[in-house]
Image 1 (spheres, rainbow, N blue to C red):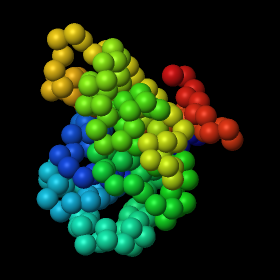
Image 2 (cartoon, helix red, strand yellow; image 1 turned 45 degrees about the vertical axis):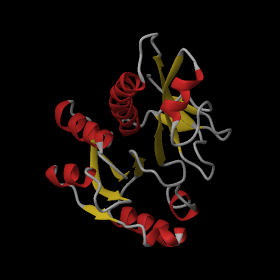
Image 3 (cartoon, rainbow, N blue to C red; image 1 turned 90 degrees about the vertical axis):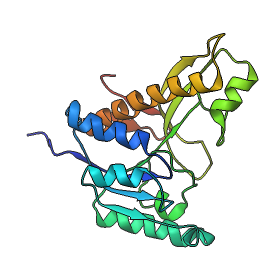
Length: 208
């Protein structure tokens, strides 16, 4: 008999937690077979912590003093998620780079969401960079994180056209709407066991 227990994930946030909320809502509204076992924030004032608490999810808040030594905070993150028996880590607006302490503990099991079609427009200002560049299409990428910033096996991408009358604000709103659909979609396939990573570092999604 196939294992039908939910996929256990830990979520990393830094700010408002809208992607966290999208996952919480998908679990409640669409029967997404996922359980968020813990939420860790890089900031104690992140609004996403309130979203997690409202959903009854255990939380841990870190602070800037801990980040003075990257290895320390990475050890804390790895330890907290391992203790919670997380199977995957989901970065949902987490604005720090994870170190080997986390990546080695969760090989090809750390997901990141980037608001551009990687490998284009890496970095923290991807939406604005794409908008200002004059490209006609940007999008959203979900990928497995590795030791290089905004690089790693790409799991899924979805294009977002840039309209002639778009402002940065209207583009951002459409980008976020796509993020809120794509992340739960990827997690659904993870939970179903449909996602594999080849030895060459390419991702295959069965039944996609």
